[in-house]
Image (cartoon, rainbow, N blue to C red):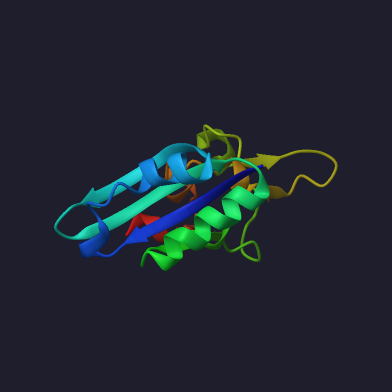
Length: 136
């Protein structure tokens, strides 16, 4: 199972070896997709966690108990599909294939599990319909 999460660190937790602990204690393959961390001010990580569902659940609980906020990536990314005209500008900018348009309906489809938080959808959408909370 693969799960992408946004991990937010308070300043006092930013220097903790969290990734090491996830690998060592929970046998999780961790990929850091995006990072903005400063030991003095905290920060955020986008992590891809790869293991069985029980280990991932335990690891997420461990992080939360350690004072770290953990949110599924799909809850941090949104777009206003009611205003989308399916022009395809975002699909051509999306390197991960998280955004696509195809027959028969030719409507924009978003697959958050493929997203790598590159933020190219934000700049490519002519209607500015995308929001990524990590982009703060």
